[in-house]
Length: 230
Ligand SMILES: NC(=O)c1ccc[n+]([C@@H]2O[C@H](COP(=O)([O-])OP(=O)(O)OC[C@H]3O[C@@H](n4cnc5c(N)ncnc54)[C@H](OP(=O)(O)O)[C@@H]3O)[C@@H](O)[C@H]2O)c1
Image (tube, rainbow, N blue to C red; front, side):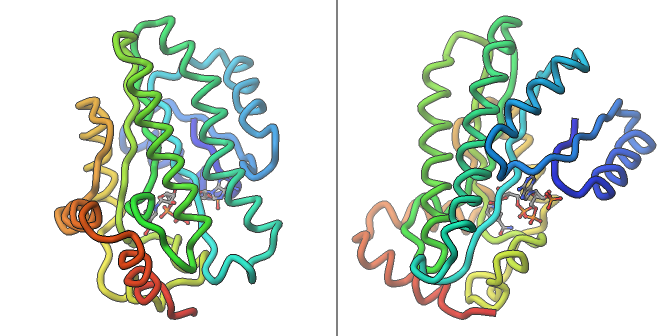
């Protein structure tokens, strides 16, 4: 079951999945920034008698600019989609996986979850939540047959940067991985039951390096990398 807001896009993807891969696909157009969206999805799943073996919490978006200049409504929507919907869907779907003794949960986080990231401050903080939540839950679920994986990509070529207004930042101008590559790495890591999957060697070294650097220095460097607005 594919979930996002733009129904036409979902329809196109569903057709590709069915025609090319023979996948039985359903779509559900829903806005995850609306409180109660996760419960609505759960109700749809129950109504359609759909059993979920793999839950992929992928939807997410960012702001660009100082927190004090981003509207409270946008910040609220970011927290609602990146944290609340992800946490509620996981909470609602994991028990049925546990009852069947198998299941995979893939939460799409980000390498910025490991670093304070000025000008994407709230976004990075939501990803810190996603990574921590996934790791904690993974440990709680040991022995149930259900695994939880946090996929942490670095910059990736999608519509993300444009939607956030950060295409001109050094972060996005200095190269990005393809979505296909990131998805394949995430899928493989999820199937191995890994808890944290960092996409790409460079990103792995970056996350490793920031562990040893003073947090203030990391924030200063991130500020430079993220400063240029579109
Ligand atoms: N691109 C990067 O550099 C990068 C790096 C690290 C992590 N990530 C993470 O990767 C994930 C996927 O992002 P992406 O890079 O593929 O960006 P994207 O191209 O902008 O895709 C975002 C996806 O989320 C859906 N979505 C956004 N807001 C939604 C809402 N309110 N309700 C329901 N669905 C919503 C979008 O569909 P609709 O617009 O049709 O709703 C779209 O399918 C996100 O969690 C992002 O934080 C991205």
